[in-house]
Image (tube, rainbow, N blue to C red; front, side, top):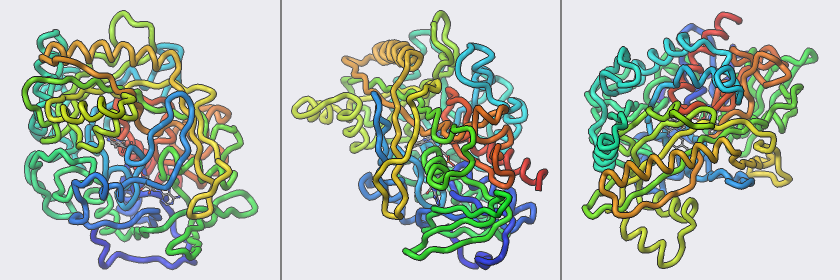
Length: 515
Ligand SMILES: Cc1cc2nc3c(=O)[nH]c(=O)nc-3n(C[C@H](O)[C@H](O)[C@H](O)COP(=O)(O)OP(=O)(O)OC[C@H]3O[C@@H](n4cnc5c(N)ncnc54)[C@H](O)[C@@H]3O)c2cc1C
C-alpha cells in the first residue's frame, strides 16, 4: 500500500496505542482509533507490498504467508505454510478467500444450546450491527434474498458462478438442499474506496489466495489501513515484536521489536496484540504476560474443513472464476444428529499446487495414483465445509526448545479431532458425496483437512477461564488488549474473517470508551 507522506512518531513519544499486526483483527481497530484522533502506531512483521507485486504463481505467492516454521503435532496436525496466518501489511486478508458468511446466532450460544464448548459474551445483535458496517466499508456482495436470513441486504450482486458452483447448485437442487450464491468481499461493480482510490469490479480470476493485484478483493491494505494512514496512523512494516515492557504496577509501557536486525523500543500508553491465533499466544508465553489463568495457548480450535472432490466427464476448469461461489447453510444445525454445532458448505476451485498438496496431505496419494488424480484436475469439482470445533485439553500451543530467526522459541501446536469433530466430518462427507453424485460425478474422493488458528487466548467472563474479558481486554493487565482470532471463545460454523473485523471495531469502541 502507499505509505508515502505518512505521519511518523518518535520512539520516545508515548503514543496512545501500539497495534501489533495489520490483518483482520488489527486494521479495523487501527483505523477506528486513528479516525477518533488517537496517536497510533502499527507494527507489522511482514513487508509492505504494492499491488503489482502480487502474482498468481503459487510458489512466489508464499511471500504473503507466514512461512517461518511452526511445529505441528497431534492426530491431525495443522498444515501451516500457505494455509496459515498472514504476513505483510494486510495480514491474512492478503491471502484470504474473501468468503464472508455471517455468524449464526445459535453458534454464539453453543454452550447454552448444547452444553458443549463456550458461549460468546457478546450480544449477537450488536455484533451484526458491526458486521453490517464492515460489509459496507470493505464491499461485500451477496444474493438477495439470502435464504437463511431474508431481511439481509447486500450492496451488490454476488460474484459470478464458476463451474464447480454451477455443479454444486445443481446437485443441491436435485436433493432438495437450499443453496445459493456466496456472500463475498469481492466487489462486482466499480467502486471508489475512501483514501485508497478506484477499485475495479471483479474479473473472476481464480488465483484469489495468491493475492489480488486488481483491487476487487477486499484486503485491509486497500480498505481500513489507508483510512488509518489518512488519519495520522503510522504503519511500520518489517517490524517483528518480541518483547513487552511494563512498569512496577504491571502496566505495559513499551513494545520491543526487531527491524533489519536492529532492536527498537516504542513507548505506548496501551497495547493491542493482533498477531493472530499463533503469534499472539507465542508472544505472551515468551514474555510470560497475561497468563494468570494458565489459559494462554490452550483451547486451540481448528475448523473442520474436510473436502470431497468429484470427477466429471466434462471439463470443469475450476481454477477459473471466484473459487467459493456457492454456499449452503442448511447444515448449521442438521436434523437428527448427535453432535454439537454444525457446518456450512462452500463450493471449491483451486490452483494446481494447492490441489496437489491437498491430494498428498489430505488424501495420502503418492506415485501413479497421485499423477492420475492430477491429470484429472481439470475434470474435478470440489466442495468443502467450515465446521464447529470444540475445545479439548490436549489441543494447545506451547513453546518449543528451538528458536526462530528472531531468537524467539517456535510455536508447537497439537491438534487431534475429538468425537464431535469426527461426527461432523462424517456427516458432512455423506452430504457432500451425495451432492456431487447428484450433480453427475463419476467418482469421488475425500480429502481430510482443517483450517484456521483460533481460540488460544479466549474471551471469557470468568478470569480463570480465559485470557481477555468480553471487551478484548486482558484480565490481568488493564492496558493490554487482544484483537485477533485467538480470542474467539468458540470456532463458529462461519469462516472467521468477517466476524473478526466486526469484533475489531467493537474492541476499538470499547477502548475509546475506556481510555
Ligand atoms: C488460505 C486461507 C484462506 C482463508 N480464507 C478465508 C475466507 O475466505 N473467509 C474468511 O472469513 N476467513 C478466511 N481465512 C481466515 C482469515 O484470513 C483469518 O481469520 C483472519 O485473517 C485472522 O485475522 P487475525 O487478525 O487473527 O490474523 P492475521 O490476519 O493473520 O494478521 C496477523 C498479522 O500480524 C502480524 N504479526 C504476527 N505476529 C507479529 C509480531 N510478533 N510482530 C509484528 N507483527 C506480527 C502478521 O505478520 C500478520 O500480518 C483464510 C485463511 C487462510 C489461511
